Length: 481
Image 1 (cartoon, helix red, strand yellow):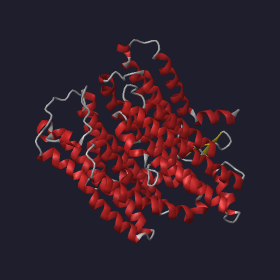
Image 2: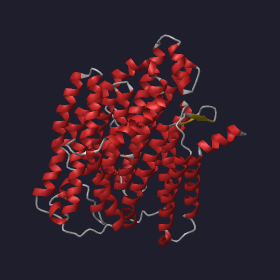
Image 3: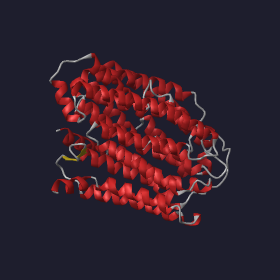
Image 4: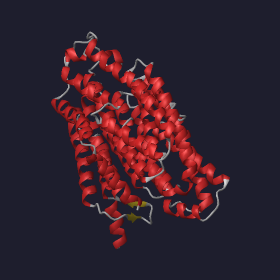
């Protein structure tokens, strides 16, 4: 009885999100369209309630539930709190867009919450099947959200591409997991690590590792598994692009820690080489591809691929310091990505999508404050001080340098310099080109205020990075003890 009570207590945030997602889906059938603001409020309340229960049930000690299938540790709690905050910001920024395009429906909020539930399961999964189930729940929700605008043929095309490639990646991941199970006889992450230590390397074990790393790389969007990223980013409605390009990166990081660090660390020398190759290729291909783009969302897609390369620079160090720096980078990147797409949503209006780079021309003449906010985002993505993006790049490159990856770090610095071109090109167009659109902003006050505070936080975290860095490092070290 005590074990069952602890199991349910550990899953309380997940149960809250699950229950409210189902309630919202049911409630939407009975309320009038003009009362749908109630569903938005319930969704925000769900995130607050989940954060409250996550905070209240937190303990410094690592706990397990349901026969070690579920882990409750500091790392999972910190990542969940970051996901709640990020999802809440996304709901604030997407509300008006959905209202203007007749997409303001309860199933959007239900699918977002179900996707969040999948990410929470991924973060706390300590069993290969648990992690996989969470991943599939997230993936199915994202496929549905990409195709949410049924009257948009580009969105339907993007959803089909995403579904086919995502199913392929999921199959590869599951195939790799089956090989690991076949060689170790266990699905528990810790048991897998212990049993690998007790046996010699075998071709089947290495093959399973390759498939697992390939599945992880797809979820991040790393080269050579980045094919879906540009098309899905460009073809999806901007709110869905915002969702896909931000919060799932936190869940993918947690899955990487569970599988590679806690489960497959005895094979670190093998997966380290794969991460080195993917990191270098992602930075090179991402930056050079982004330079020639004219569509803002497509440019940010290639920027994402480049940023994933930097994230992997920390991971390929294969030590706690490197993974802590990657965690810091992902947290910073999620904030940058949400701010960037938030400004795109702010400038969009009914009948107009601000998704071309030229749509930002002369933004300083029309709306100088939001041009300044976009400048902060672009500087942060380019890694220019004193923004948080600079310190994020510095920490991952420092970790890689200390791990002995000298030429890779030099190449990354060179690529970061080249990559700054397309970010600064946007700044040039905002401040030095003539405006092509003179329509007034129609965004609600709460969206403007939250977006301003969040974007200014990129400066604050750049000036005082030790706040976020200590949280990331401390939570990771406690969980890996």
